[in-house]
Length: 273
Image (cartoon, rainbow, N blue to C red; front, side, top):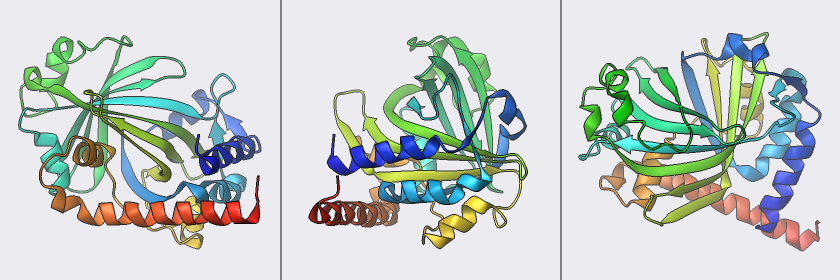
C-alpha cells in the first residue's frame, strides 16, 4: 500500500475511536429517501484534520464494532447509455440504476436513484440476495415503475468500490457520508484507483448553511463540487464519449491529486513515519 495512504488510513481509524457511536436504530430519523445532497471533493490527506474538527458535533455510525464500511456498487445502463448521457450533459432530471452491496454484512439492494430538476434526490430500493446478478431480470415491475426504458434492456457496465464513514448530527437531523479509497472496474478487467480522493456528502432536508460540517469544510478551503462516481468511472475506465463535458471535473481531480502527492513528498522529506 502507498505510504501516505497507509498513514492516512491508520490516522482515520484512530480518530474515529474518539467519536461517540450511534447504531442503525439511532439514525433512523436521518435516513432520508428524499433529501438534498451536497458533495465536496478534496484531498484524502485532509481527511484526518477534518474529522478532528467535526468530532465535537457528530456521532459515528457503528455496526458490530466497525466504523469504516466497505461498499461495492455495480451500475447498469441502457445500450445507448441513457443514464450516463443524462449525467455528463447536466440534465436536471436524471437516473441511476445500481446494485449496492454492504460488504461488511453482505446486505444487497437494487436501487433506483433519481434527481429532480429542483435538486432533490429520491432513492427507491429492493433488498436482494448477495452475489446474484439476475436482480434486473427478476425486478422488472419495480424498475419499470421508476424508469422510462424497459428494464430488460439494462446491462451491467461498471463497478466501483470504496470505504465509507457515516457521521450523524441528530440535533440538526443531518447525515454525512465520507467516501475514500476509491476504485473502479469495467467488468472486463480494466481498473482505476484514486487513493488521493475523498468525497464528502451532506444529506439533509434543509439548507447546509448552518451545518457544523459545512463550516469546517469552508475553513479548510473545500468547496462544493458535484461528482458522479458512475459518470467519471465510465469516462475514464470505459472511455465513453462526450468526455469534454467532464473536463472541469478532470482538472479538479488532477489538482487534488497533485496536492495529495506534494504533501506525501513533504512528509517523506521530514522523515515522518
